[in-house]
View (cartoon, rainbow, N blue to C red):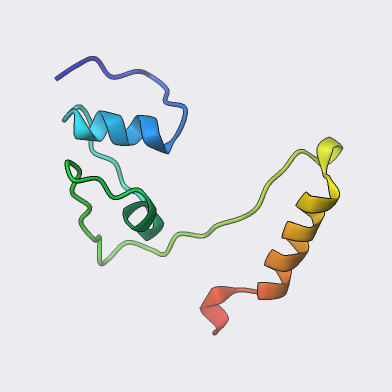
Length: 82
């Protein structure tokens, strides 16, 4: 095992630590679907509560594209209601 940093910068860094055998990590199901790697096992946690997602952005840099994405996400509504 290598040394584990106190802080990581993102999903790919976490996956690299998992693949190296240095850590285990819980991730939402999207982690398995979008970041599958042959040297990392993703196991479901059947009793875990659902993960809630939200959009965030800096209010002083909201571009028309960011506002359009926020509007589209709002129009989709809560997926649990479907």
